[in-house]
View 1 (tube, rainbow, N blue to C red):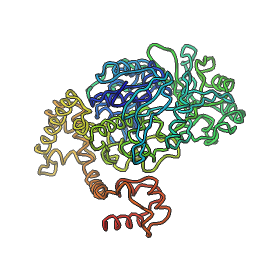
View 2 (view 1 turned 30 degrees about the vertical axis):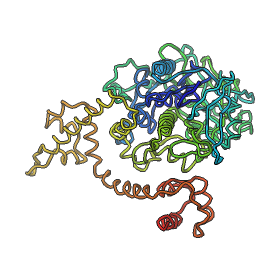
View 3 (view 1 turned 90 degrees about the horizontal axis):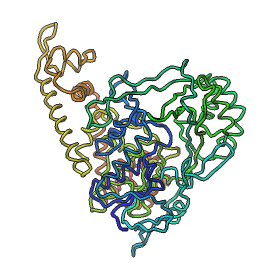
View 4 (view 1 turned 120 degrees about the horizontal axis):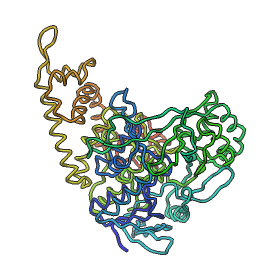
Length: 607
């Protein structure tokens, strides 16, 4: 069985990776231990959020599937941070989780160039070139089958030597109900890949029939739901409410009395978990002054009564979980369908990767998703798309697709991973992006669809829709430049200049010039926000140009930092470990000072 590209793992990274490789014309195989769990939402049944929603839009703009699938299977849509500026807006949707995963599976099944195989990969096949450089040749499965390919993308999620923790009870598993991939970790270590451990967790699931909603607050979706995918102008969907309840002093007391039984505090778990999505026991310890913590009761689908308790992630024993839940308002008689648990798993510290997401140690081997130390469906999907695209491009002798920090949140994420590494599971925030005014969710297609089209990731239908939108934006912008507004004090200015004033809203422009109502909401929003942000963006242009100049100063792959006497030893070690490709990337490495960069630039220019 010979392929161009093999994708190992069928989660959100694996699904987008398989789709991207197939779209680019590569003969692709997706191998996963269970085909029924493709794109399964192992934790929260939701897609998007602040910064995460922008990533989904970027994946969609590059031809990915996540935005289309959540638009088709969402049960509640909300635009977060509507009261703030558009750069902070974050689309989020509750998903019908089973509908989502089966819709994704059907899309993959219908793709040309892609084969799906239910196989657990246990071994990476690696050979060496005459110069000693290792390169991947394929994989071997638990059934003894060998799949050959010159490019392999690992998207293993939490399955590498995964261990589940339910209080003092420990079980091997990639997640509840699935076996781990222990042998694959061993073959990676033998091949020279360094592994470390992270942990994450998930809350209990309850039977919604046994929840008393009478005194709880509903949390409803937007009246005008905004689609994720740029292929859709509007959404017509019957939305389902979530509900809000809270912990209380009694629940906190139960947790404190049982901290010695919590794996995170008993010494049973020593690995690091996500700081921004802590367990309830960590919240009680870290925020001891808080009297309560908000919980969201989130339905998991249209055809199930199962409810996800967002905010109550824990690894406490089952008896403690029962006592906690029966002391929460509305949950006094709730039946637990699935107990909460924590999971520890292997990941590969991502400074072992090139910006293309290819490993430095093994040619042709790419990593995407939680194996790189990230957390979140959205971050995984973006990495999967880029890793697979670069696997195919390298196969065709093309330069890798590397997005800049000023171009995409995906560019920020990959650069952070390969340049800075991780000391906790990486989650995307708007604060990580220094050019976030440019990286709005609404303009992701304007930033990336042409890049995707040129790379072969975007199909003709999406390109047509994009070009029509761009033409409309140009027409509306030209109309505003040419139209005049008479001022009360006399004289006139262009409608564009008038709209730039902070006190002027788009509704006033629409009242003065009824012609603009012919344009779609997405077009008018784009033009309005471009004009409102123009002053800020022009100031950012200078810093973007400085970064581009530094990106032009390339550093050879085999550059000997230890031969530069003027460099500090810490700088030599860090630069040798990360191997930055440009001075711009070197400037973001931890511990590298402006003085180090000045020395490096002088030496590079000299030679």
